[in-house]
Length: 269
Image (cartoon, rainbow, N blue to C red; front, side, top):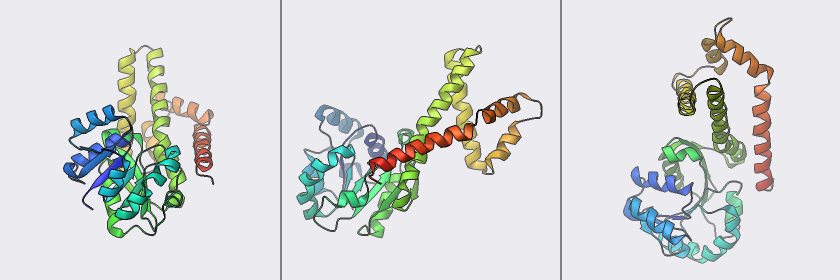
């Protein structure tokens, strides 16, 4: 598996491509990228020293790994257009699209295609994503290992059964938005009570970042850590009790469930 090609160079694809190149998962000379926005593509390839592909069929016919980074709505037109080129080369086909199974992708191809899925998240932008990956029965161990290496280049990689992708998609993919909202709410509260906007934001971001790092590196039970921050009759316990009274757990669970059900709808389950 020497060459890798990316069809699509959007917001999610860019950090993946950059990290794959920078971490030497593939040599930069062996990375090809195609996007319908030729000017955006040219600029990205020049800055990151990877190859600009002429079209989708070049990617499909020349690369050992073909990564589909387009919106899933494009698949019904894209896959039939490149299936002959794919069948000649028989590369590993990898999709980053949410809600579209390996079976769905393979249904457009007239051969026993090795198809893998990656579920990344936006934190790939800073190399801190957590991604799930899986492959169908035609994906070899070597190919699956390479998919894991791609994921690990921009964060942590979790090999999961595809049946768990919906729940992972919410926990890994949607939660960054929930976290941004929480940080934003904290910053607004700090500003409302006297801090300037920039300081409030910086403190909220660092407090959440440090708390996550502490939990990750030290482990332990979440409730135990909450108790360690609180002291009887102190300031923290008052806020914690307020969050409990507002039923924070239920609010988060409701948000999670709605995202989860939407994923089910998109995947036709």
